[in-house]
Image (cartoon, rainbow, N blue to C red; front, side, top):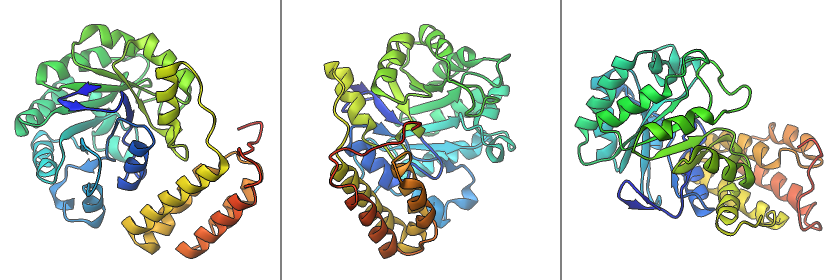
Length: 333
């Protein structure tokens, strides 16, 4: 797929998720089938550029191109400076966050709260586009502020007029948070109103759902977030289904074990053992969610504080299931 001057493996995008889409996760998703991965958002507050957290979020060493970095903020000047900073640090695409519904973001009128102020949206987009004239700028937003104010079509037109080169839309409003089901009619409407690429996002949890959303919205691509947590091979499965029309077999037990072990090794190396072990807990929990007998394992895992202990427990858990070629899941999962 050709996208903003880059050749991508496909039209499947990893959604930016705070605390999740760090470099190890992005690299793994790209290896397992994603065409592009957007970094977790980086603050536009220049006072935080030197923080360890921000430096890690801006670390793209060895990452498969293109490098897409998301910035968040509400001040046009600061957002422009953040864009220039990240391009200087290696960003090849600058993505603007107007989709995050978190209170700590929206309370400072950033994220999806910006959708309430369309003139401010235009000023921010214009400032960022002008600040990095040789770098594509993209925008992620929601269908609206609430269900009575679905202004995604208006935001999309503003974005196109300001020089934004692609947009991604989550099929919920800011008020919806992540509750209920995503709707795709608004995304389909936006697709008819603009000429720039439109990426559909929200509740894309299976290959079949991926095909439905593409057909329903006529979007140019799909962005997948929470469904890939603990299941990064979802991109590979969707790619196979969209290409062949056939569902691939689920990954074997030994492969899931190997993928998780690789992911853990990258986390420990990236964050250091102490922080890496803390970050690893949530990923181990996601990988084992719904597996028969995993509840007790996850509870015990949360008590472990070292890399060696986590690896030993993970190995024991999967080796006990190695006799079965495929992982057995609880019916409710």
